[in-house]
Length: 115
Length: 116
Image (cartoon, rainbow over all chains, first blue to last red; front, side, top):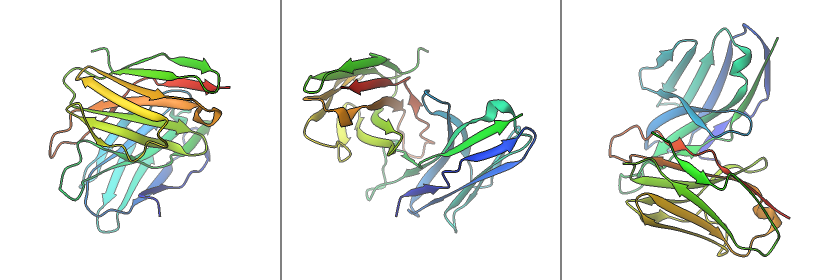
């Protein structure tokens, strides 16, 4: 089983639609959670961190369920510019309780927003 | 801040040749990561350093791959000899790895390697 699993998609949605991505992780000793965005032929960039209480940034809402080891990202009112690959990312601590900032990336979910 | 700098941005080489990829992390960051990305395998962590010391190189595919970090501002990833299956985009990323921190990693633009 992969440490971080995502539905690879692709998701094809019209402008203005609401779309949700889900992600599960295997290690309960996870410390930090993120969503990264990667545009075609570009590097991954942080979209938003995910906090235990859930958080919102404009049209984007992230949720975390530690009991179910589940993370979600909701995009409202999709724009053409939202077309990208969305990566679910988890920071696991090692047996000694340290991680040095190591992140584990999911395979990514491809989103295409069309006119 | 210039961000993470990688060079070269593109490299085309013939099978059997040595390839050296370079990375300059963000000043002040103490952890550096080398990744490889392909369509088939996604983003794979190859090796990472903390305070210039290699912490985990279990992702390095073979002995043909080696990485060094001689100081806090420079790292190299070397492939010798290169093979066509090494063709991929290689990313370098850095972070300030503090205990309890959120560990956002900043990626460089990547080196697109093609081995013919």
